[in-house]
Amino acid sequence: MTDRNPKASELEYVLLNGSELWEIDYARGSAIEVSEVMRKDFMKLKPIEYSGSIEDYLINQRKCKNVHFHNSAFGSARAHIKTPRCTFDK
Image (cartoon, rainbow, N blue to C red; front, top):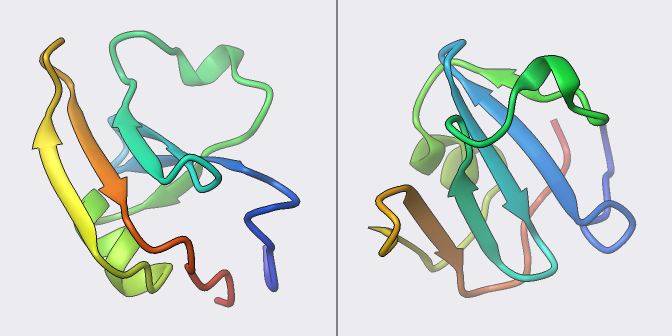
């Protein structure tokens, strides 16, 4: 997964600490916790496993800038990525 371009693959799934599943849509600049609505067993894309928080993953691993976190009206955690530049080098 090196040198990945968010335009080529707009969606990424991250499994945090083995239990919390997040869908990251780089084209829309959003991330949402989808553990309650998606099962990783039935996913077409294999999630990236990461030990840590979504904040740590986006800011420190993907070098996303200007990320805002909050809970949605539906109760699930959500993030907005204001700057469309994230790094996909590992």
